[in-house]
Structure formats: C-alpha cells, structure tokens
Image 1 (cartoon, rainbow, N blue to C red):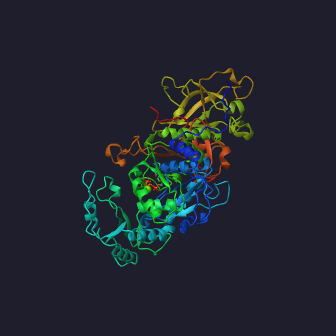
Image 2: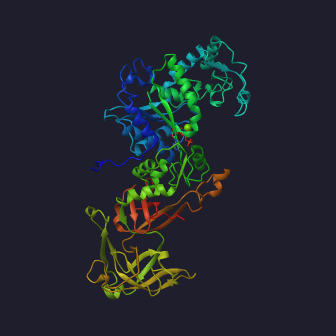
Image 3: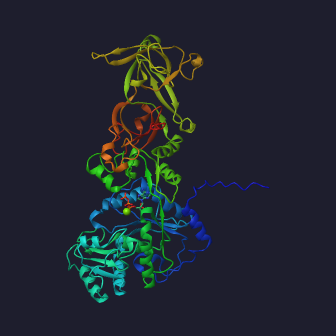
Length: 598
Ligand code: ATP
Ligand code: MG
C-alpha cells in the first residue's frame, strides 16, 4: 500500500465552520446565486449578476472604541475563511448608534485591520474591488423595510414608557403582556412612524416594534424594538435622521444587503438567531430581499488570561488614567499591542491556533507570548543591553594594554542569519554590567560576579572578580576585576580558561544611553473580574517600570518600531512614538521565557 501524498500546504487547524463550509460547497449551496434585482442601496455591484464568490463573510465592528485581541480573533476567522475558500470578506462598520461612534474609531479600525495583514480591496481572485461598507448607508432601505413591516401588520408604534415596556416584557418565567398600542391598524402605525421620522415626537417618547409574540419563550421574539427616536448627529449621515435602527434590526439587514453567506458572531447571540431568521424571512417573503438568505453561526468568544476584552472596560482604563491611552503598550488593543512590539504575524498565528469552537474559551497569555517568541526568534536582530547598570572596572587593563586601549569585538547580528553580518563594539578599561550580575556573597548556584569568581564577558574576555567599591551609604558603586590574559573570544587558546558564567555587557566608552520601558501584565491575577471582583483591585503595580541603561553602539542607527532580542533579557522594540536615535527608547515586548509560569 502506498502512503498518501504529502501536502506542502501548512495544515489548517480544523474547526466546525471550515467543516461546515466545505460540506456546503460540496452540496452546491451557494453555487450560482442570482441576485437579479437585488435591493440596490448596498450590493449594487452585484445587481443582476450571479455572485462569483463562493462565500462572503464580514467583520462588523461598531466604531465605538479600538479593536482588541478578541476582535483579532474574529477578524482572522472571517478574513481567513474567505481567503481559504476563495471568497470575499467585507469590512463593515456597524454604525447605527451615533452617540457613541466617532470617525477617530473608524480610522483606527481600518488601520488595524490593514496592520493585521487583511485587505478588502482585492481578495477575490485578486480582482480589484472595494468591500468597505457602512451600515449607515443602508438607512434608507432599513426605513423602507420598516414601513413594509408596518403595512403588513408586522410592526407597530408603541407609546408605552420605557419602564412599562420593560415591565411588560416579562422574564424567563413569566410571559410578556401586550402593549395597549399593539392593536393599532397598519394605517395608524404608518402615520405615527412617519411622524417619528419627521421629527414630530420627542426623543424616547415612542418606538417602532416588531409584532411577533409577547408570550414567546424566547424573549428576543417578544416584539423587539426596531427604531427609536434620537436626535443625535451621526458621523456619516449627519442630521439627516432623528430615528435610528436598533442593532438587532439593522444587523441582519446589513448582512442580507451585502449578500453575506455566513454571518459569524459570538455565542451570546445564539438566542437572537430565530429573530434573525424571522426578520429576513419576512422581508424575503415581501419581495424586499432575495433568497438564499445569510445564516448566522455562533462561535465561542476568546478570553485571554490577565486581559480584559470589553471596550467598555478598556475605555475605563483610559478614562481613569490607569493607562496612558488606547495605544498604551499594556493595553490588549491592537494599537497597544503594535506599540508594545507584537508582530501581526504573531497575532494572526495566535488567532489561528486558538481555532473556533462552540464554547467560550480561556487561553493563557503565555500562548500569545509563545507565538511572539516563535515569530521573533528567527528574525529579530541580536544586541547587548544593560538595563540596570553597574560599572565594572578592569583594574589591570592599563598595565596589560594601556589605559585608553579599546579592544575591537564582534558578534553575529543573528546567529542563524550569517548574511546579516557582524555587529562591532569595543572592550575597554570599564564596562557596564547588570547590577544583579554581582553579589558580594553569592547564593548557592550563582555563577556570575562575586569576589574570586571568573566569568566571560560575552564575545570579550574572561575576568576574575576581585571585589567592589562602595559609596558613602554603603551601596556597591563599582565592581572590580582583573582581565585574565589571552582569553579573548575567537582567539586560539581562549577556551583554555574554564568559566561557569558568561555575562552580557556594554562598553563604557562606546555604550549609548537608552531608556528601557519594562512592560508587564496589567493584572496580577489571570481573571481580573472573576467572582464579580472589581478589576481595579488586581492591577499590577509593576506593569510598567522605566529604567535608564546602555545599549551597544550598533543600535545608534536603530529606526523606530524595530524589534531586537537583547541577549539574556528578551525581546524589545524601539518605541514607535518616543524613540529617537539620540535618545533611544526600547519597550520590552516579552522575556525570553515565560516568567509567569508556575
Ligand atoms: P466589546 O464587548 O469589546 O464591546 P463587541 O462585540 O461589542 O466587543 P463589536 O465592535 O460589536 O464589539 O465586535 C465586532 C466583532 O468582533 C463582533 O462580531 C464580535 O462578535 C467580535 N468579537 C468581539 N469580541 C470578541 C472576542 N473576545 N472573541 C471573539 N470575537 C469577538
Ligand atoms: Mg457588539
């Protein structure tokens, strides 16, 4: 028997959506969809033609905040499925709630979806196309559809107070009670709806509701609200409207107008699915929409330990000054993660590896850092940095080489990428080492600098520690050592002297002063809100530590937003805003190992 042929394509993690779409495509569910006479406001580009794309998905953010790591999951799922099945994914702003939405957020969302590497400009057979949409561009159609429902007796204007409406909705155990306005005729309702639209009624004085079943066991079907009166300026439609569609009404229509095949959402919308199907079914029966209609599919939310993924909570962190802004490198926003130094490749890998399932999942933060390290290990240039410096004086340097002698040293820019060449730096009479690389009295197993120990200055020479100097307060102000002759790395016989420890260092004569911003997790506990706790109680006081130290001279030309592995310390990025060649600022992205593992 012969072995099955090996595929070169990387294995895609299986998930139920992939399996579903594969089966549908085999069954020809979406083959040759005809959209003749398709309701024009939106998908006019398809009007009268067969839709060539086998599947169409969308990522539908509300522009009321910045995207976070949970959104990255949804973005990669939707755009990824479209890519894998030769389909199209739309970026659509779900902008039906003008009070909370702003152009700033629209711009930031567009920027971050692009940053993640996805495009709505040409993703079907590389044909130029432009699949960027705004729900607010469908307001006319949504309103027409509302009049249609009214005319068919499927919607009514309710003038109950908000409290009465809430009370009459009932709960899980109690059926709802009909509104006194439920029995109005379609003609009466149409007049009222038009008055609402024309601004003849006060904000909040009445709403348009679907007329389904106040006793339905599914509360979402107890006459959900479709339109409310709200005099608010909209970032796209300005003051054209004083009534706005409710999210639950708008969203299915948006999907249908754009000929979406798979409308993916998180699990909490599962109970909304009967409503989704009811609404679109009614509009198709009425001839306003074409079949086949989009179908809603729910997947589990991504939760990440040590992180909150709720725009409202993230806004609180910003508004209360707990972080410096939406792009603070400790924020789980994509803007924050980019500034922290995460790569789009690592975020995509993380999103893909966590798959899609039918349950909400908690993923440990170390999985994200693991994806980052896997991405950066092979491509981040190496360099030496001293973050908390202490001076090491080589007391026999002058005698051996002359006081001002500087011994040229070098190291590979990347150990696996020889084509990147060598970094050059010098070893002189004084070097910077880390404070915690010295101990007057070493603990068991400490093999770095202590009186009598021998260590190698990496890429340099072996030194033997002879003691230290102290300041007036008794603090160690410098470490003293002698160079062991003939031990320079790369010279014959250099290895004859055995050492147990190797330390990184930066020359005093050529080191560049640098600021290091050591970021760590924002919370001290994996689930900051578990048990109803206030997340403010578990803020990590050490989530941001600033230190001044030194980097090797090869970083003099480091541009902003460049990633490095500082040997022994971890991955760092030059800050995209604050870094200057003459005043470098490096953010710690992650350590070399998971420092939080138990
Ligand atoms: P938040 O709760 O942070 O306000 P949201 O769901 O209200 O998020 P939207 O802008 O409506 O924010 O989200 C756009 C899309 O991203 C939705 O389809 C939503 O299901 C998805 N999404 C949001 N958070 C997550 C998450 N943690 N995991 C997976 N998908 C998510
Ligand atoms: Mg939402």
